[in-house]
Amino acid sequence: MERVKAAIIGSGNIGTDLMMKMIRYPQNMELVAVVGIDPASEGLAMAREHGIATTHEGIEGLKQLPCYKEIGIAFDATSAYAHKLHDEALRADGIQVVDLTPAAIGPFTVPPVNMHANLDQPNVNMVTCGGQATIPMVAAVSQVATVHYAEIVASVSSRSAGPGTRANIDEFTRTTANAIEKVGGAAKGKAIIILNPAEPPMIMRDTVFTLSEGADEDAIRASVEAMVRKVQEYVPGYRLKQAVQFERYGDNNKLHIPGRGDFTGVKTSIFLEVEGAGDYLPSYSGNLDIMTAAAKATGELLAQRRMAATAA
Image (cartoon, rainbow, N blue to C red):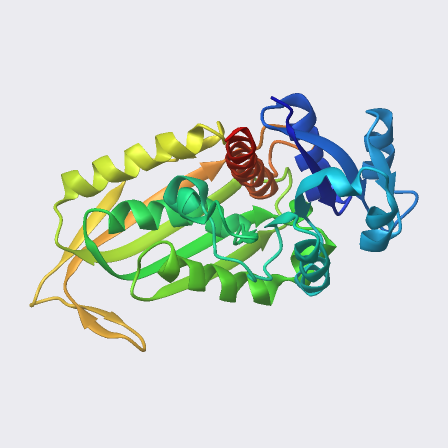
């Protein structure tokens, strides 16, 4: 069966890494166009080397390409502001959109948690790099316990935080915290990001704290380890840095969370490391790799659904 034709909007680091994944590991999609705004973009040059149509005239240039009418899925790796305009144009032409910006127009989507619930949506949002790395862990705890509070700390190399990432820092914290609640299942979520200037560059590290009730430590540990294996199916460099840690709080030593009050239950600490696959970006850029890997995994499922509908 003919694969679903796809386009990438944004020829920077994220768009180019996604392009290389789609070229190297083809499944249900065929990448036919890459869009940028800089004619000297390395990403556009690489796309042309692989025989992929390109334009440096943005969304309007994409519409002028002969392949535009055949495109079924478009990945937007630009900015939250630009995505609002792109989504309106693409949706009007019946193209499903996978949003790698923090715009959050469509439902938050984390492949191992809720992807199958969003296959018919015209736009799906990939949350943030920190969200893709940590929300599966919050969801894993939520699957076996009631999570009152979840806090994540994403630490990434400052080298892997380009202009787009830095421009979207405020959106990162708001979007990730919101998705921790909506997708992860926590009653209250908080997100923190650290851009670490260490040399040599550090691999992405993520710390997840949850406060929960209703499950013992063995159940939480087993659920977390099972979720790690699911993420590793599309991000091989995703792993626990050390064993899951637990701390209990009872009536005689309640945990106080500012703005939330006093709680009893189990505090779970999960320590993660995300190493990139090195398809285009350095392996320390796990924060970008997990976004592009999650976006590709999402696109493959969307394409599979479209192919099945066509066959029927």
